[in-house]
Length: 274
Image 1 (cartoon, rainbow, N blue to C red):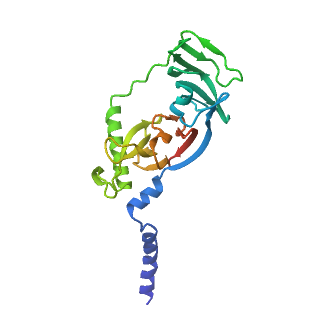
Image 2: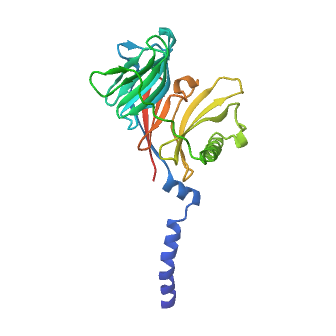
Image 3: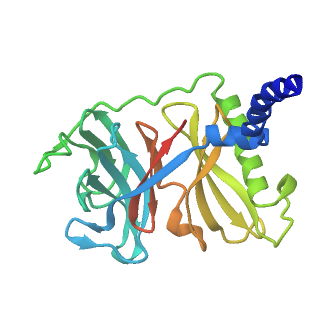
């Protein structure tokens, strides 16, 4: 009897430990390595200076200040015959300022708090705002240093190819389309943009759905992917045409933050890794 009791005492702790870890390996890894996404609204881009943009307006691209405090953006508005104007949303502001009315190209941040751009219409040339956080923006014209374009490392193309493959595999799994072929319905979801963050291992990828090669782009979505762990998580999405969540109107800023435009509202998603 005593011998059986002692044996039971030694066996019970082992059984208890087995029950604690008695989870599928994939489930245990997911709980440890899952990405956490928190999203907040940064501001309204429909009001730019004294004007309210029309419903046909769209944001073309985002150019965030390196620390993310200010976000410059180009926009078009067919109702106002505007093809590429420049606006700026500063931190803590609800609406944006108009920096230049149209024909803007080559938007850069050549120095701390300094925004530079090229205008190709009347009064063209290189322009700059010296301090975008000032109460009154000081505008300058002339030659200004342009930040050189960073040359990606030699393995960047291979890394992007591998990351795209992971992103595609994730979407094929989520959307039940093995080998990219929809098993339900006719919409096929594909990765169309892949954006690497300054941290190198974190990326955002953009997904749209189509029923055919020439059909309208539908159901756009942004996802985050950690290349180190292979874990992915949705950032934001909408059902309908892709115009209201454009793939060009997005950018990474420091500290694993991703800014993007949905409709005419600027949002920021913070990606936290375990």
